[in-house]
Image (cartoon, helix red, strand yellow):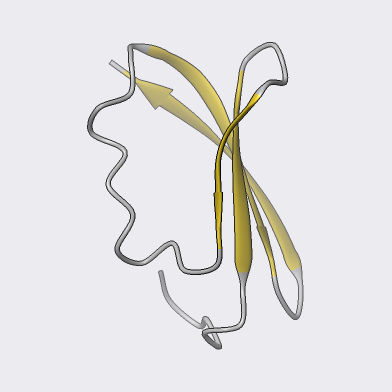
Length: 56
C-alpha cells in the first residue's frame, strides 16, 4: 500500500459486519484463504481508509 507510515492498524470485516482479522501491519497479511464474498477493510493511521473488497 502506498503512502503508509507503518503505524497503521487494520480491521477486516465480512459483509454482515463480523470482524475477521485485525492487526498492525497489513503489508504482509495474506488474505488468500478467505472464502468468496464481500469484505470491508478499514485502515486507521494518520487518516482512515475504508475499502470494499470482493473475493471471487
